[in-house]
Image (cartoon, rainbow over the protein chains, first blue to last red):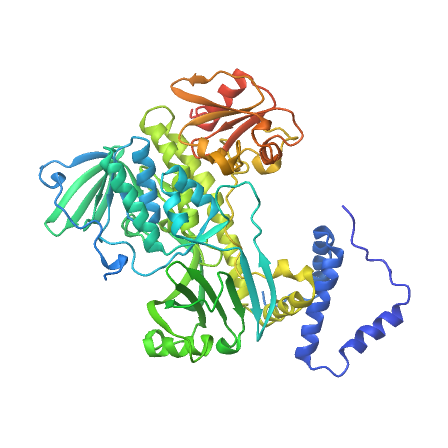
Length: 69
Length: 546
């Protein structure tokens, strides 16, 4: 099974980051949330591999403090 | 003219069982004359097992209720001798449209695969469905088959002792008692039998209400398609379904939310107001049936309790999205009846009935999982869940990839008993769709258009050895259980579907098929010892009961 890439993999990190933030500029919280959801769905479909997606979900969740559960 | 569901079909009649002092004993009693109970009884009587059906009412169910019947249950009904009436009356549909807000976001076509006798789905009112089953009961009775239906018979107590079931029954003429070797409880989600036995029914309750309006609309303003709206202008924040039934009856299903006044919503003037907002002020329709329902996804921990067997909604309940209620109930009795007959005939150990639990709990869990997921998509349980839901719907209009994520009900597909203890050997080069545990897949034999030859019409009712270009004996007796050979060739279907579905990468094949048309085992060639071993496994004779 392939592994989730967690080493730097984006050639021009500052450009990517600026474009990501730029995408959200001037939007309400609600619109930004809607946009993020669409972005996640598009990227997830591009990756396709459920193993990678699961690793990504786990990796992201690990870095967020436990919620109300 | 009186409507079907207003006419008593099996009015109370005094039975000879009410006269003797000692209770009369019956091999099998079925409680509940709904779709599942009737199917169980027809299956039993067809195979010669005497059966009595008890129901507290005397009519088919009021209103339409279940409407969507899938291919597999139609195949089961064919085996029971009443599939054709259903298909002739039913509405066949293939196209579904999904709407979000004010517009259509996409449409799908079930594109039924060629080379099957039965369509993917038909829509048919439950009262028609039950009526055809009652007709079949009458037909069997006239042929001298041991089947009897007793209306106006309400079970008021149930108890088990010495390997049988004792029932106290209330009738207009007072109470009487009967004994049954076996009891099949098909008495619905609110099962009085389950309650009287103090058994659990655990699961998840969904805080939502749905208004069903079955309306009669003349004209053909709407096509024979399944239309599903998410968050439409005429029902903001909720969903709505429109689906056609026979006789110009349309099912409209409005999601209402949790905090509502049910009595107020059910008033005809309010239902009519809702329908006009939906269909337009000029729409002409008549209300046939209005009801508000809530639902739960839950099942019993076990479906078999000694000599009492639960089937259909009494054993498991799902949300209506996906047509998994009556459809799974019919698969329950399909699974149960042949096992019960072998046990009654003393040809299989009683432990075979535990495989009913094993296989149908697997089926129930699959249905509960799917219907829970549909419900969570239709009614998002959190703000972020709604955000993703809406994102999927929005994307589905523009990008094909998002369409499989839209979930307005995952329509019932037949259950494959993977990992069942009854399954025998598999061959890895043969097609996965006909692996052990799966229901045999239909295919034309000969020219189906001319002589109507379908594989599934040749299967079921007993164990069969289907051979494809392999020699084997016409009959095999395995300690009292007969295996009948069905000899076929890949060339029997010039279209190639038969070979594609059963041979895959092989030149020949031998399939052991159970009486419920499920595949028990398969091999490339015939080996008598292997077939005998697989048969013994399929009837739990190999189970170590020490």
